Length: 280
Image (cartoon, rainbow, N blue to C red; front, side, top):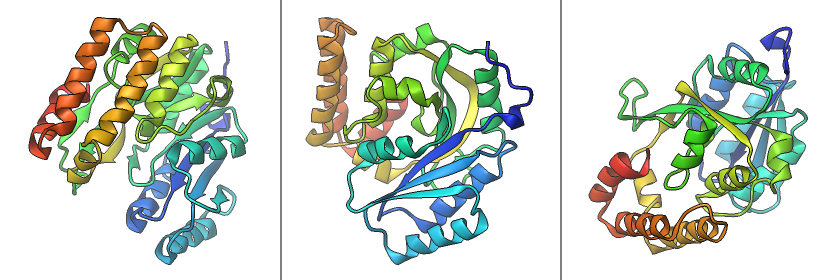
């Protein structure tokens, strides 16, 4: 069993990706929330996914000046999308444990400490996530809490219909992720596709039954998850599930029917379905 003499002694990386449309204020808040954790990472690897506007470069310069020992930028000449950006960034992470963080969310101050304790006491765990609280404008006014299942068995079953992890909360073993092919290009479903490949490779999974991040949602998120193009990506993913024997024909048809209705529904209806059926 892997034991740390002190949680503070275990070094880990944080992996982020930023692109031209990010909000500079939110980006800055996200980095600050990482650095204000009770246990700090040894490094924050930030992929610059293509050329950034000056307002975002200003934030990059600011955080590099504030935290020169921690910040490591990975600049890409052109925008390649989140999957490939994270794939490139992961190769630049120097430590076996890697925590994902989005550039517009806020990590709870105890997040990394709690996750490191899981890895310290459960040597077989490959990925560990947790719950999130969702807000639109004011982080003090929570709209929803997305809970995800706890154990490997529960996660495997849940993943047949819905994403079993809140991506911005996960910490994983770099070796385990690379072994299954790492992140790949799969627009808006990069993480779900990764979890699927880890599941069929029998990786051990765990979700802490507590809130680890505050996450910005709202109308823009609902809009991104609508339309036929999004459904086609989902169908491609569930095709993989079915071909690998992970889900039955009945589960395949039922899930795709639910997804199709949600994607073509008006935004107000989709928002309701998203909360009741598609988020867990």
